[in-house]
Length: 425
Ligand code: H79
Image 1 (tube, rainbow, N blue to C red):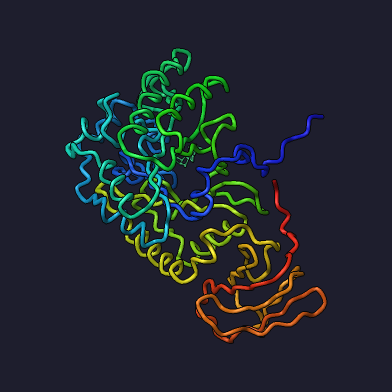
Image 2 (cartoon, protein in one colour):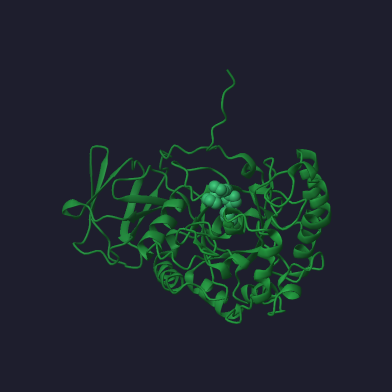
């Protein structure tokens, strides 16, 4: 029988690529889903939908011509690029990826390829992406576009819409030639230096065709990273499934993507936001496996972020101001996840992320065989006492930790710490 490939092996991300350096040390990114679906907010006619608000056209099987009319009243006057970039900055994210076109087919930027775009089809008439790209650059945040290269429910030849258009009559090549590739070229030409093009849901192209497409795009911006969902393992770094973290560390450059509530696109009746504690744990957990977390926010049709997204992201930013050393520029922890939390590392340093206060304030760590030189709470100078009992290292913690959600200890050591993490290469 043919052996199944291990789903957690690295694939695309193993290639040496100097452009990956910023990405690997960034650790925290912001994903933004914004489109016509943001105005619908999970409601189409008399039905409400929960989750995946950006899929509403498909879920309601809304006719393309009728759905397109949403653009006529799409007027996000509350959009403020400077404010978005400032919140992003203060949240501690190092990169931002926003939907230029999602599966609905609507272009959220000024496109000459189609009139179904924010400048030509809405009363807003401006290009928000121009301002956002500039604002992010000003804040020193890497800027990138999400682009759905195959699915397009607005176009007869685009992937996915079988309720308006006959599949047998679709010409996917024609779709790539007439819309996808020209639009990707616009995005890579008109918005300055992009950090990432975040492809999603590949389809309709062979390996060779995908290579040709990628080569033609790379010429425009050789340093721009392409996400793995460009297809055929041709991306620069690996993305796992939506809302998925690998069980053990993975070598190379990769990213986990999560929603803040239960949807990518704005849903008016979804208040299930991850708390600051949830976000911080998610971030330190992903970092402990060696990856980046890109967390999604869904602004509404007015251009405003959910109040709780702003609040909780800024709270995460405050935590990062204090404990960022244990996240940015780190790699996976050298010991497996512990009952009390997770670890990240830098050469000679192990960061212990305490999620749960241990019994008797004694932090028991299995697997430390390096020569410890000091242990302290990050951000303090007071050394903590530790002892070794058998293979266990026990650190005496204060009764109250400075941050009940995730206090970080820094353990410095000399010599080698064995890698016991079950790293996948
Ligand atoms: O942009 C977000 C998703 O819309 C997109 N990827 C992330 C980043 C994505 N496209 N396709 N998929 C994810 C997988 C499709 C999942 C589906 Fe469903 C399950 C389609 C129909 C059932 C989720 C649940 C979407 C609609 C209902």
